[in-house]
Image (cartoon, rainbow, N blue to C red; front, side, top):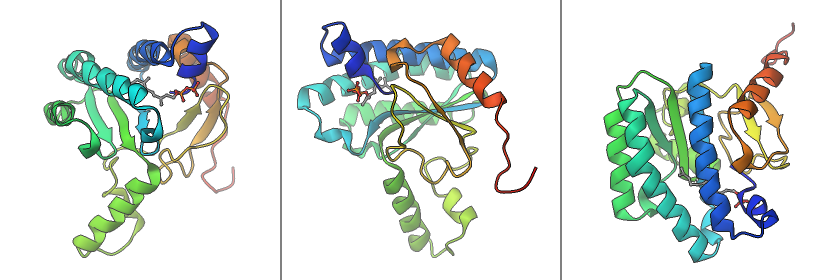
Length: 216
Ligand code: FPP
């Protein structure tokens, strides 16, 4: 969800305001994905590297995550959305961890759209943790076993990876899962995202030819 800071700066507002408007965009995009028939959608909210930001910014992001859990996520669970998380929640305040864990538990048998949120998430960290679990369970290192021990176990690999705000790198996001994902690069800052952006992304994706390493 890139470009919150730049979006705010352009308006001579603090970065926090950009993140606040980023949360509004998140709500619009989740609603649009559900409406347009997207089956699974993942977001990068907080990375394993984001902790180096000023404490004030991290605290306000953590507050927003807690508020989002108490309000929107609870509503999503009631709407049959399968809310889940990737990343290590243990670095979050205990109260937030508990709220997120109870949401994921309550949503685990839901059958609607999967809304997967990366919090204290890093692709390398996720792969290393999956490998560690294989060692502990004494399982062979196979693609299937790695898949089933990642935070995204049971999910499909993403068809599309969207990078916004003009960025053109993966920044440690779903490194294992993106092997054959189509990349869509968007210049818009995240707080400007909404249903129209989601439609634009799907339209661009629908013109791609996917070969998964084979021949057409
Ligand atoms: C990147 O933009 C954005 C983030 C590091 C935080 C994204 C988080 C939210 C939108 C809100 C909290 C999440 C939930 C699930 C409620 P940036 O700050 O790097 O912007 P810049 O590149 O313009 O500086």
